[in-house]
Length: 312
Image 1 (tube, one colour):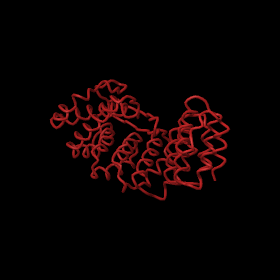
Image 2 (spheres, one colour; image 1 turned 135 degrees about the horizontal axis):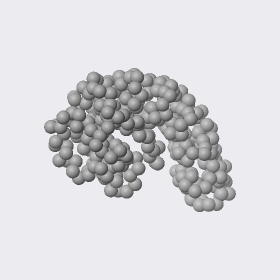
Image 3 (tube, rainbow, N blue to C red; image 1 turned 30 degrees about the vertical axis):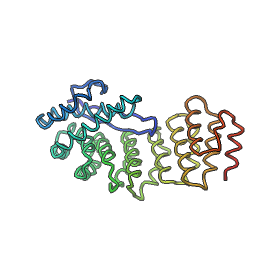
Image 4 (cartoon, helix red, strand yellow; image 1 turned 180 degrees about the vertical axis):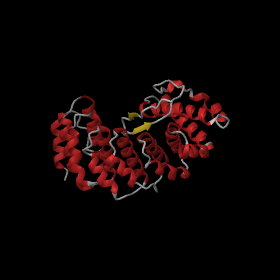
């Protein structure tokens, strides 16, 4: 059985990074959502209980990868509808076979354990939390990455974060660090807390991966870490749009949430906007407007500068 490496993708709005680690299946190798017709899923859901576990995992693998593609890169209302339908089907089918998935994660073949780890997140069941946390200490990085995805999908505010922080700081796998950073962003938003998060996010600002950097920028903004404001502002000028626009999003949020820092955030955004071009310039403008200037000054750089300088 051939092992598939995690597929890493980026969502433009939240720079969400998901890993899909899976065993081989009879789905197309690129995991395109066209390989699954969401309209047929209700009837397929009724059949999952009768499927042998091996066939079920193969089918599940294809559905998760199709959902991943639609969720991350779908642009039309139809894509979003299909993603929601796929997610509902995945939630329904995994709940029905939760116990089998837990058994596979505990003692199945490695490739099947990788699929089960991701699938258990769709159950939204607290029973999956302990086994997924235990999987974070396994030797195989693909299994750990899928477990990070499962914990992200569970979204429980009582999730212990120390091991996730450790993987963000120390993993040699870019994919695993990406998923650890995403997991922390999502769980911190849900209310999870740990003393390790702030230090890990600050270290992530200098990670060689743009994906990790962008997630850690958003994480520091969620934590309202004023000490990181200047390092985040510096990344407005990063050569990678992913990082620069994550910094813009973070500064617009911090400027709204930290009244004393609104001026610093605005001035940093305006300075970067004045030097930017194309999509980056448009993204910076959107985030400048979120700071609620008296009006949209359009392309009038002097008026933007005057507005920013007037802020404390």
